[in-house]
Image (cartoon, rainbow, N blue to C red; front, side):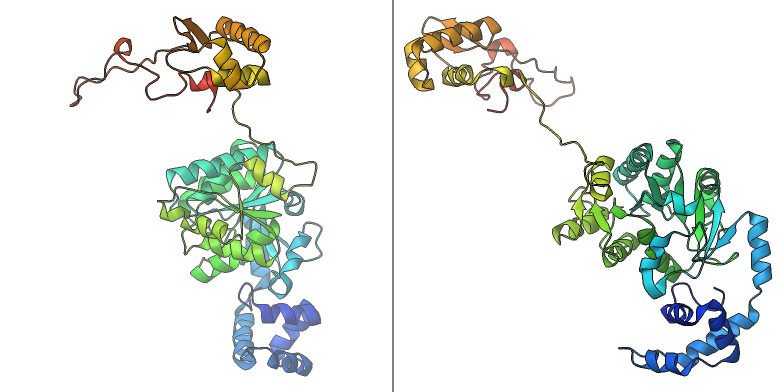
Length: 409
């Protein structure tokens, strides 16, 4: 872990074939196995094995594993490796870029916490909309028994972690530095709360500070630990889209939250949706529906609000549609227009009149006028105030006087 950079796929292949001990012996001897070197030379872009081996050797010579273990123990962190009881086996899907080990700091069990987990990522410079949505996702997912995984950064990451903590549920913070390094420094309180309820993890040894490359490489862990990733806000060029790309390469579910079309911070989400790489997600329930078990985690379908007209029978609705808004019409004319028999029309007209839908006039039946109350214009208004309801015909602009009563028709 000290010799190679995080995510070094050549070291990953070396360890996979010869084990960690065999890889260390090869680096110390500055001699890779011939069959391994020959296979690497057949890659599409053959690496410079000599330069890579020299770099590994120098770093390994300066490494002090005992000091790392002691530093981790002092900070309260523990080291887990593939095969450890706490190791999340879904990380094996990363292949040669699988981390060689993870430093874990917190009270929760990492493997158990990630059995039902969702990654929520987004812009560091999140808008108020993005931070609000992220917090709602943190609360909603946690209250439904799902662990939130994110990167602990400013913006969306911090908001979703806080939402999960408010719901008294564990959250997993994946750092691009050592677990004993607080970055960003202003999140020390957030990370302390995350360690108390969940875990803070990193593949970087203690004392390692973040770099731009480590942030991007770290994103593969966020995608691999969870069943799916949802992008709340992302610009066209952002780390969140990098995490989304890792999720797609791992065949994980990917969702994106739409935002205002005028917001540059949502342009990346809209690109994912337009390219059909992500599913449109507007609530925690929809994300659970995407990543959950078929039949057990189904999200409820949104329905339009019910209106009083929905309760009318089909013949009565047809009669109501045939009643004019102005003037009036007799029962015979309404019956012909509605295509309903005279007896049924007369019965429907009586019921509609009693319910307040229609009224009788000298010319017959018409829709009942309902006056609309307008708010009083402020004194500073430049325009003249609108006419009062008593002098306004409310049917002039609206075919039906009450949308809640008669519906959108």
